[in-house]
Length: 116
Picture 1 (cartoon, rainbow, N blue to C red):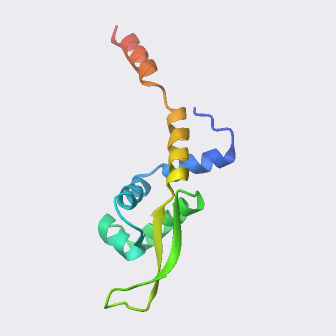
Picture 2: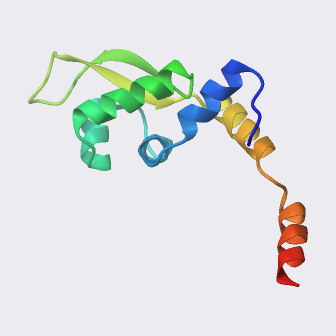
Picture 3: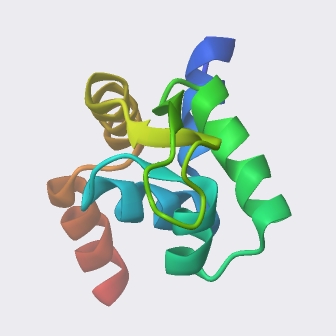
């Protein structure tokens, strides 16, 4: 069993796990800040599920949000919460996850052991 000693590290690692959260990170990594409806259209997730996962990622510091006024003609003047990646925190989290995984060399050694 993996041992993650610090609760804050556990929270960071848990926030990255899950296809939905990885999909949100993928979407936000290729664009400027987006609001919930835009992310929902791109990800094909329902808004409630998406809002939950955005909250988990934001609480862990992987993403940030800020309210901005929408500029498109249909919604002009309405405020929306725009989400974007927090690259330093995301890189820190990915480093922690890498530290939990075996190195390529140790995987190759153990796989050759089983090939005998």
